[in-house]
Length: 178
Image 1: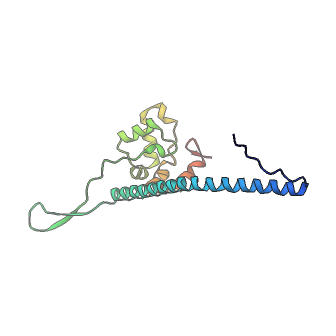
Image 2: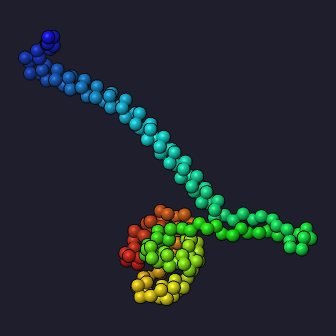
Image 3: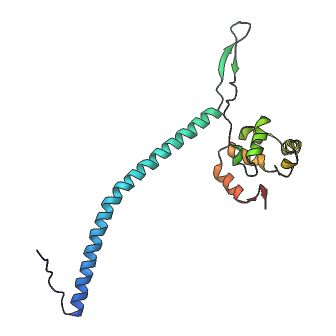
């Protein structure tokens, strides 16, 4: 059996302290080198994932913008006299998640969808009084809700001002400004 014999540490207090510090420094450097090699690979993989997520997010934003911008297409007149007019395509069946609006839950979201209010743009265009009448007509369960800020929140969501909306919603207490 081979036994590794290290030279004895110096008997001098200061020299022994320096030798101990050198051993600790050597161990720290070896640990740093191993960690650097290990985490460099992991960091590169995470950066690639972040890059992919940013690309997907940008593609999503572009596709959402493409859905909201109407494209005008020329059509021929009914008489066939060769004149053309511009036709605006019908709105797509894409609806927004109205529950993002502070104060709107699943049941109120369903109620609004049944009445044709399924997007942030439509909710932003409706007056507070109209929403209040809709809630009053739905029964006492819905009458307690205050839609006073829903159109403004919907306008922020429609315009993609998510940071502003989040900041404003942080100031709310159950749908009402404090």
